[in-house]
Every structure is written in structure tokens, then in C-alpha cells.
Length: 462
Image (cartoon, rainbow, N blue to C red; front, side, top):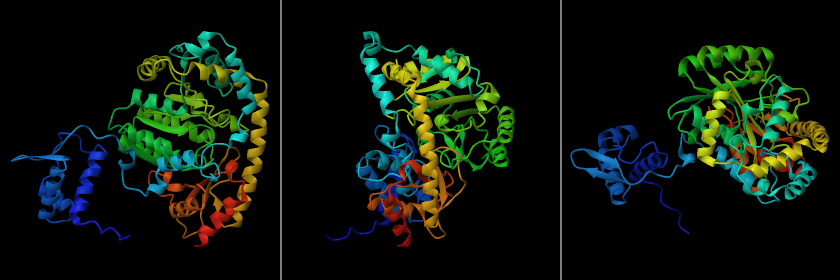
């Protein structure tokens, strides 16, 4: 089979315009740069742009208005998240990492994924809760939930939050269908397109994808072993006037670091002076041996919103999360939830409540924490044997943020290992500044199979 010819300059101009339309940088009816401006921007001749524009007109992507210029045609393009923002290798794209992990054949090893193996989850408690749900009254099986969601579960969550020093009544806790939906609702509530949001660099990669979907500007703040770099945080506040800061509570994803009390206090003072709202994602709370400081506890939920779910400890198939926030915000968020998903998952909330209140859950989590401690230790030894070193040694959780030996590129390793049935999580998927090309995030609970290290060692030697 003959190789396709390389793209011409005309093809390159056409591809650039199509990409801008697909990413909604150019909306229907908007005027394109003039022929001369486009030629200068792409360092091509005017005749090249004229031909490219004429071909785009012929295919219906743009229209020509004599004497006025060229305009984007047709209905609004479907949102293509992969084409938003600066170009990056698809192998380090956050959505690509998620899709590879979720769609992988059962035989594929997934040390780059962000969840525990199914055999580590609370299967016994889930089965017991499902049997209880099957015996419940018909309204629990058939009716919509209330706007805030299952009252008994919200009361339980309020008691759990009180153990972390967060004094909040059940009326200020709203259930969502997941932690991701909780962030999405908050973004819908607080943000407008064009706003700026601060995130950790590195941070949980789905924050990047969500913020792109909301058409806001994300700005990364370097993360240290004790929390965000406060000098960089202050500079970002001054330079960008952000509306929101999204971070992890407790165990940080991907680094495994924990926030120090000193950093927490200074961070809240900066936030107060800048009228910044903080979203604290507490999804890993039950993995902690000793609870780290919570911004929501220090702040009293004045400008901090806490979210969470139990997809990492009970079941990812059971979609139920929560938002804890000040009363007036919860009222508005409940209206927004009704407008976008109406009743919420009443059945899921009931099952989760039964699982959490079962006597076996505490013992389940004690066993998980012991298994994770052993898995972290074993994985670090195996990584060290092939020259991969941790950025820090975390005290809890599943994640190990590790530096590759000099000269290795994480994206290239991910491509090579994928061909051998191993899904990795390259560092730049987590880094907004793309400065983590020499890092990988490992899930210690998913890295026990000896083939993981064998495949990785061979890939580094190529």
C-alpha cells in the first residue's frame, strides 16, 4: 500500500481553520482573519490562503461575502474537547488516559488507572445493600428523590464531616450523582465562559477536561509536598483574578502529598483577600490513616465548598456524591441540579447509605489501608530496582508520583507499554504547564503483577 502524500501548505491552512471551528474558537457567523492576516500568521503566501479559503467554501465549512470577507458557516460545531487548548500528544491527553483505562480488555494491566481493583472493593457490603434495596417499599424503587437527596444519607455525611471539624447541618449537604457531577454543578453555578480557575500543577486530569468544557481559563500553580506553592499562588491571584481554585483534600492526586496546617492557613488568608472560592475534593478521605487538615474545617464553609463520593472505596458502579456548602449556595445548587438532572439517584443513595452504615464497612477500609501500605512499599521497591524514584513517599492512598531516569519520556513509554498490554498514566496528562514529561503516576494497588515492571523495564531500554 502506497504511503499518503505529505500535506501541502494549502492542506495545513485548511486543517488549522477546521480545528478552530471544531474547538469553537470560531463560532458560526464569526469572521475569519483576512487573507493577508492569515498568510502572515501562518507564514505562507497569500495565494495559498486564497486557495485554502476557496476550498473551505466549496466544502461548506465557511462562506464568502464579497467585499466583507470569509465567515464560519453552518450550525455550531459539536464540542471537541481534544482540540481545545494547546496541541498535545494524544497519548498524554487526559481523556485518552481515561478511555484506555475504562475500555481496556480485562487482560490489560492498568497501573495508570485511578481506582482499586474490583476485588478490593466492598463487594459483600454492596450485595447486602442490594438485597435490602430489593425489599424496600415501592417508592424507594420507583419515585424521584427530593431536591437535596436522601435525608438519612445526608445526616450521616454531616456526622462524618463533623469528625473532620466541619460543622455543617444536613440541610447544607446536597447529593449529586458523582463527585464529577458535583464539580460540574459548581462550575455551572459560579463560572462564566472566560473566567479563570486555579488548579494544582500537577492535578487530577479530569479537572482540566471539565474546565475546558466550561470554556474557562485554567491556570496551574506548582504543587509542593505541603500544598500549593504559596508565592506562585499569590502571584497567580494578582495576575489573573481567578474566580475559583479546585484542589484535593487529604491525599493529593497524583502526588500523594498532604496539605500542612501552615500552608492551609496562609492559603485561606490569600483566598479571603482575593474573594476566591475554593472547591475541596475529599474523595480519598477514607484512605487516610491520620486525617490531614481540611480547608473547609478552617474556613467554616464560608468560601470553601467540599465535595466527595465513595466510588474509590465502595463501588464505582454506584454513582453518588455530595456537596457541602453554605446555605444560600446549596439552595441555588439544588435548583441547578433539578434543571439539569431533576431528581437524582434515589436508589443509589439508599444503597450507599446501607453500605456505609453496615458494620463491615469499617473493617473493609481497615483491610484496604493495610493492603495499600503493603502495595506502596512493594511497588516502590520494584520501581527503584529499574531506576524509577518517587517524588515523595506518601503515607496513605494508592498513588505514587514518580520520576523516570534521565532521558526517558513518559508519553513515549506509555505508547510502547500500551502495545504490550500495560496502561500507564504519563505525567503531562496531569500537568497544565506540560512540565511533567519525565513523570508517571502509578497506582500501587494495580501494579502488583510482575509483568508491569517487566514491560516497563524493556520499554526504557529501547
